[in-house]
Each structure stands twice: as C-alpha cells, then as structure tokens.
Image 1 (cartoon, one colour):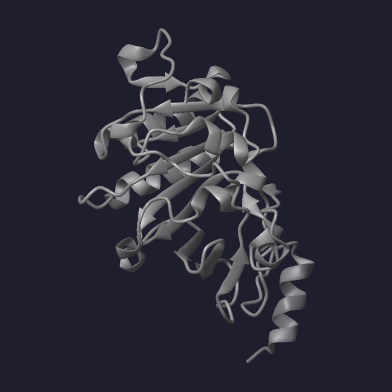
Image 2 (spheres, one colour):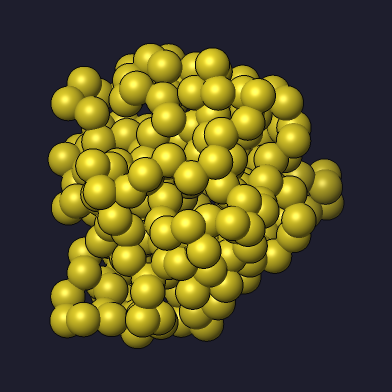
Length: 247
C-alpha cells in the first residue's frame, strides 16, 4: 500500500489539490477579515467567505450577530440587504456600528417562502454587497432551498449570511461554514465554529464586542417606517441618511 507521502507527491505532481484534515483548507474564493484576529485564525482563508452561504446560529435574534459582522460589513459601497429581520432596523444603532445608512436596504418579507424567494432574486441581481437572511420561522428550511441559496451565492459572487436558531444545528446544510453564537456577559460573545473545512475547533472563542451607546434594535411595533421608495409594493424599504434624525 502506498504511503501518505507518496500519495501526496503523486497528487502534487498531477497538479491536484490535497487537503490535510489537520489543517484549515485553502479557499479559492476571496474573504473579508472579520475584525477579530482570533476569529480570523479559526476560519479557512482567514475571514468571512465573500461568496456562498455562511450560517450563524443563535438562541434568539439580536444576540450579537450585527456587532460581530459590522467590521466586515463596513467595507465597500454596495447595498447591505436585510431580509425578514425580526425587528425594523434602528438607524442610530446601525450608524453607531459604523454602517452607512444609505447602503441599508430592508426587505420586509414574510418569514418562509417569501423570504427565501427574495434572497434568490437578490443574489441573481448581483447588485448587493452582502445579503443577510433571518430565518427564525417555525418551519425549517428545506434542503433543496438551502442548496439553491448556496449555489446562487456562489454563482453571483455574493456572501449570503443566514441567521437561524440554535435548533437548526442538527440539520444538514450545504454551508461550508457554520458558527454558533451565544451572548454571555454584556459585550461578550461566545463563538463556536462547529463546521468548517478543517479540523474541529479546539475550543470556543469568547470575543469582546463593541457596544456603542445606541447599538440596539427597536421592536417592530415601536419603530415607525422611516422612508419608502417606489419599491414599496414589493415590500422593500430603504433607510436613508434621514433615518438617524427621524428615529
């Protein structure tokens, strides 16, 4: 039986990539640094994938996912598309995280098929910098829907961040990167990378998140609609620079 070393040489000689299970895989898509060096060190390529599906699981929405993502979301000028968030986006909180409100587009879709359809259309448009899809609906995402979303994000070269409940952890997913988030003390977030192309994570991270004074979300019932444009009939609400003053 050939040794591992001889197999590795054979693969290298044929120009074929060989993944070592004790190392993080090399990625062929660009990544964005997370803004947290300890987290970058745990992710293949050293950051968030800029194409394809990534999952963030949390006990409840608003558990620290936006402060965690904010450093990467700040870069670029393309729209940040938020689909079916559990609350209406609160302008001062986004601004406090360093996110430009003129880039924020909110799709007020019904959780479920409407939200997944909106995500597919957004990916096909190739017009977005990031797509964030909240799925805390009681109905689980169907495997074929997840595959379509992942392939759509790969083909469009757009990162799709799927925010799901912790109960989805036991369900299969085509996402190559899956993280479990759990808020602990104020400003502290426990981050477990439980699926990645590489060895199992040795231990979960505990990250210190920036907590600006206004970094919070208002419940839907408490937050008025700030600005609507001609796409109102499609359920798309754009938040402009007037948001902070109106909130």
